[in-house]
Image (cartoon, rainbow, N blue to C red; front, side, top):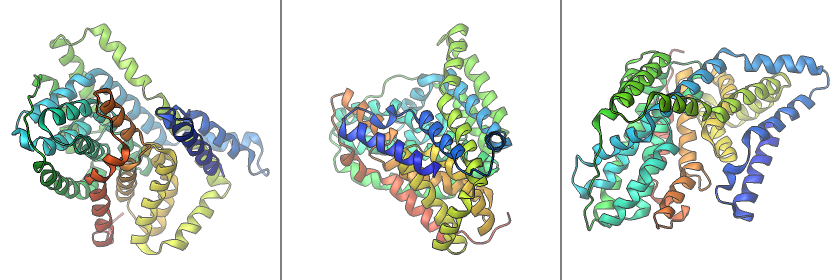
Length: 428
């Protein structure tokens, strides 16, 4: 019932604002923290056998879970890192990559750039905000389809959203399932890389037919790439995520001072702003953990799991059930991090029943949520991309872009192939 209350309020109010009242970014004007508070109050009103004080104890025990606490700390540290390095560093990554190849291959490179930038930044929306103006300018200068360029950026951004060590979806999935980020990365990489390679080939075939011009790459600063490389390499080789992010923060601080990009006072302000930018994400994690603790106590998970077990049989069915669960939650919330946080406790119970390891559970949750989030016409990624295009005079409809989102579709195909052909028994 608490989840149903949240879905009805959030999805219903979002549809009314976006499509009935025609409010721009209507879904994202809905105060998600307030809606979760209403869902929490619904959970408190249930189960009259328990006193209100006992319910508070149960909710507090959910919030006090070790994984939730670690998740919050990583969210804050990731926010500080992004606040320090800012957009200029990511822009340098993008321009550096675009300068390395002939212009006729620029759309495919644009996809690869979006992949690398989103892996480095840990945010698909941030990547789209940064690279979509570059994509639009490139399409105007070279004659490539604007819809294809924008779709390539969205696809690449979802690649990094799925794999980055500082992505909030990765943090939520790994901490919620209690697995190491490097293990989940390796699991995900085997699914995401084939999808990305095939996406590059498809984009090349489609884009080369429409090439008619050239594109001049603006200047960039290679030194600004260093903090992102430190975070990426440190994460891949398995250094503790707290240490990796701390290294990125320190190197970013030193780099910004050394290059004169910002003063110490400005950087301190940026650190505070980056941490503050994680407020909503942190509060969602806190409220969802409290709600799920009450739902579990009231028998909600048992009922939900019984229905899932009735629909999906065996290990492969369990993996499909997890994927479907997080996709439905993502469609309802239009936020894949929220969907993962909500799905985590249910998926943990499913993993125990079906004999699925934490790393594979985290991988399935993150991958399937990125598939759905990448193609939602009312998702933040799509809305931000369309808004950025409109600012540069290129009016696009979501339904012009959706057919060209090759990567999310191929990621879904790769995920299904992985489940059916490579999900044999494993040591948990």
